Amino acid sequence: MNHVLQSSPVRASNSLMTMMMAATPSSPPPSISFPRRTFLFFSSTTSTALSLPSPPAPTPDTTITDSIFMDFSLCPTFFRPEGTDPTLCSSPVPLGRLIIGLYGHLAPITVSNFKAMCSSRSLYRNTLVHKIFPGQFFLAGRQGLSRRDSKLGELHPPLDFLPPNTDTLRPNAFLLKHSRGGVVSLCLSENDDDPDVKLDPHYRNVEFLITTGPGPCPQLDNKNIVFGTVLQGLDVVAAIASIPTYKPSERIQKYNELAAFIGDKRADTARAIWNRPLKTVYISDCGELKLKPNATTKPSLSPTLP
Image (cartoon, rainbow, N blue to C red; front, side, top):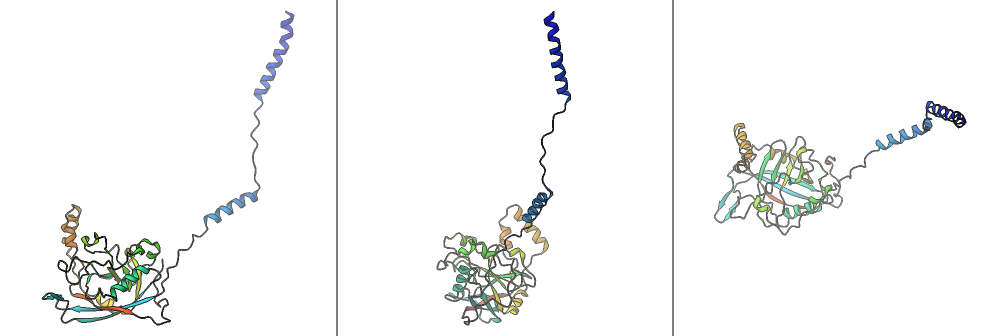
């Protein structure tokens, strides 16, 4: 009995302590405070980092290192073979001469191959302007098969005397835009060489285009290599651009789209004659011009940079 009486105050005291601890709220975790200047520093640093300008794009070197000429003519009698020696035209009508400046630092292999095609063997001579896209550009220098199988006015492989064009692997070679008339460009996206020719391991792409203006051709940008500009003869470019071309009716275009959709290969064959000039225009002569000692400068009509 005495033991029970003596232990009761201890139990009561423990119960009272337990109730007091339960009633006392737990202390909140310590808070971390930053001075106002710290927040201002962080915010200004973050905004500065986000607003830093991106590094400028490299500026293409449009120094004219070489120049060539191209004479263009019309053939009112079309191209007629005479015996075994095919003669392009017996009575050509001259359209005029282009003087083209070449960007040898920007696209060295493209320029070297283009010069070789114009000068050393003059292989561009007597080749057709085979496509004209009104208000945009015209194409020349298409490759066909052998001379026996292909049409007159086309280039004929092999062209393996030319080195492989490694410019097509360099991003800097694609920086210039097709921003106006008179831009000279190597055809890549617009190339229409014979498909069998492209399968040759020694195939070299030498087809080129010249923009006719008056506006830009953004669909060509970043897909074809601009390697030169027309320095003289924009009136000749305009004359070529004005030649009428074959344009199918809207009904034929719709049939062609349907045929292409179902995989009919005849659609590509039919489309190959679209935009062909209705008059025969061709490169009647070409060659290299020697620059004057102080002429290796940028042209007064510089191309638009990206």
